[in-house]
Structures are given as structure tokens and as C-alpha cells.
Length: 308
Image (cartoon, rainbow, N blue to C red):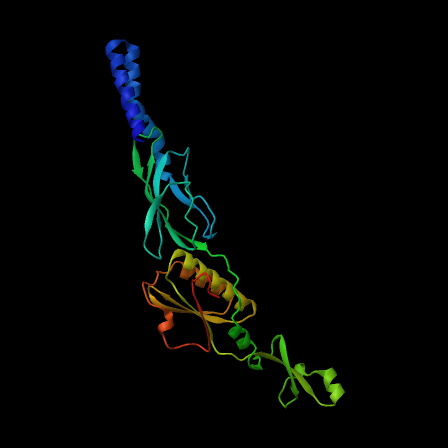
């Protein structure tokens, strides 16, 4: 906009020179028009300037590795006047921040979270000579989502899943069943009539569910960006694997706020848990392995390349 002001100053200077060298009514009209043009522009631009608002155009979640340009749209009443702004990007994990220009791609080479905030937003009249501050849109958090990395299922987990079973509460659907004799008070809906007819005894086909203690995944929220990518990818895979088998689990993560405990019974909760952890502050030092309250089955997710 400074160039426009310099260009307008040169036009005024030229009009004054023209008026001094050619002192006729036409030169006076030209000089008067040039002098009043900014006020006319401001009068035409004032209402569109007052109603101009900025809007962030981006998704809440982006896949890791994508190069999506960040755009901010200006909308208002009447022809849109010129606007200028800067875009401040902050990493909630570390507090690191920098500025982006409109159209620049978001840094999505590593998973995590980015807080996008328009900065120093201004609107100008149509000639670009007058300006005023405009209300900037609210900051928006964008998650860079990891890609699940398939890893071998720990043998201890396979053995644990094939452990003890117990009758399912409510007698709902189950993949495994146990045949046992009928006892007074049992519901007749569970009677296995064909097998009972063959044995001449009332037998039940009782639904069974795993009799397990708490299953827990642990992780330290620290390390290099590459190590954190591997940690979140493994967490995404293992959590999805457990939930696909209808197995709830617990996540313990060491963050900058301390050890955070989250129970995950279903996919919607798991998704919210990932969103929260992607924006959590990094732990400065230490490991969650130092604690003593280990679960009955526990698996620590590390970030080394060759870690199973």
C-alpha cells in the first residue's frame, strides 16, 4: 500500500506542476479532482470497510505429509476492498511460532497440532490510501493426523486375549459360548434344544466374554519429530486393532502436564484422545516407565525405528 501512496503523491505533484505551467480552468479542475479523489474513494469504501470480515478456509484435520495451502477469505457488503494480514502459526506442543503468508502450505511433514491465528488484519479503501483495523477471526486448531504403521502384534497380547472367560452380563451377542447344564432360574432363551434332545438333559449355550484386567498402552510425549511420528503411528494402529476386537483399553501418556490417564471404550473416544494428545505439551524429561503401578497387561510404545 506504500507504493500506492507514493504513486498518488507523484500524481499530486504532477497536477501542481501542470496547474503552475498551464493556468487555465482545465488545470484547476484536474488539480481539484486529484485532491478530492481520496475523500471520494473513502466515502465509497467506508461501508464495505466496516462490514469486511475475515474467515479461515482450512480443514480441522489434515493427513500427515499433505501440502495444503492456507487461505483466508474476506467477505462483506458491496465490492470487496483490499485487505492485508499476516498469519501466525503456533505449535502448542513447544510454543514455537512463526508467520506465514496467504497461500503458503501448512507445515504438515510431521504429525501434531498447529494453532492458526490471523495477525494485524487491516482493510483499505479502494485507492489504498486509508486503512483501519478489522476484527480478526478466532484462532483455529488444526491437527496433522498420523498414518497408522502396522507393527507385529506382541505375542504376550495374543496369549493374554486367549485367557480366561466369564458369562456375559445381560446374555447379549458374543462370539464365544459355553455349553453347561440348565440350572433353576436360567432363562429359557439360552437352552440349546437340539443338543438337549440328543442328550435327554437340558443344556444351555451361554454367551461368554473375556475375563481380563485392565489393558494399557503407555507412551512418552517427547523425542524428535521423527520419533513422535512413529509413536503416534503405532498408537493409532494398536488402538484401532484393539477396538476392532471390541477390547477397551487405557492410555497413559507422559506429557508436559504430567502423566495423563485416558480410558478408551470406543472409536469416538479414541479419536478425541488422539486430538488431545497431538496438541499436548511435550514432556521435558523422564519416562512413564519409572512408575510402579503396572497394569495386568501393558505395552510401552517407543519411537525407535527398529522397535517392534
